[in-house]
Image 1: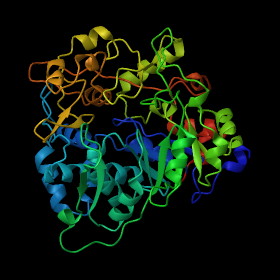
Image 2: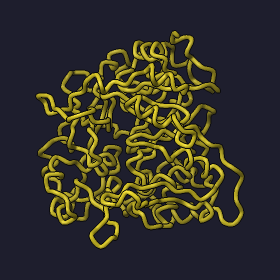
Image 3: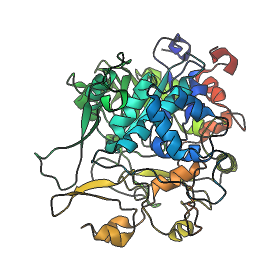
Length: 487
């Protein structure tokens, strides 16, 4: 199949998926720009509770979030969110943001309302003004947020849900239930729990919509983001776990990536070494009979053609979109990344220790950010957002929460070795800071940004110096931007 043959009508599967990049890098503006070309625009669903709350506290310049909340189907919920977080005119410079409730297993109505409303608002704005496809990306690792977040996205009419960083075996059932406004739950991994001991988190939509059940929602397609044909086959073998397709992500992709199979070995720069076992067998994936897209180093027409020749429906691309004008990155940081990539001074390391999640994480080495060892060493360790906290069973049988990026002494008191904390970065605060929402602590400290990109930057040579999302789509599909733009 050629690229020209792959170009679909508006109602067919997309050839190009714009990758979900959190926190907030693939925001609604980027997803909308891509969807307007007829390809799949994807918002990141990670930590949208924090993003909505802080943007409302910035005053919501332009009123976009308030417009979205005005369309939220449960007005009382929207009113409570606005009352709690909206600051007309915005916080004074240097003021701390009001915190949001941390994720946990115990029911927390205010937290659930904020999460549902935030995901609704992001998807609503991404879908506004066009009929192109819009998806939302979540991490299986952040299980405690998933039911409420997914319900908000369904309320806004998301066309796709993409799920990575784990095994999304319970998500098909979750989508079925929430599309019908039924109570739904998923399992949560709790460290130290016995094999037969199940912990769950969920949402009852009736708590938001009241006694009258609304009309059923559209059930979005689920794309499972995996790195191996073995995992793809495992998910596809049973109807209750089978997704509607796969994104097959290779080691070069940005953000989190799967660790190498087998014993972890590092190269001379301290990065994980990947071998033949870490490259999935696309023929085996194609034999499953489900569409799949390839990701990680496919940002160009040659990459797309390689994917099509392998039997893929297309490709997923992230970094090219992360660096475009519509990206959610703080624009000063985005321009510094572009400059560094252009002059050859920017490096992206696959750091095996940076992420509290335990997966290798791509860190863009930009001076002055949290990637800088000196900058991060000067940061007082604090876990005040907690999206990557791990639930664990305490000696008394209660559930506690810990994160290897929290203060080392605190982590050790939770029965874990201090060695686990070495090299860990606070991704939650660093990634939120990267989109211009850095917390200003009462003592005057401002959280530094942390940036992630894919390791393949060669595509930038074929794009305009300050490119748009439409430029990326056109460059990959071999068209002019105007030829791909939907009305």
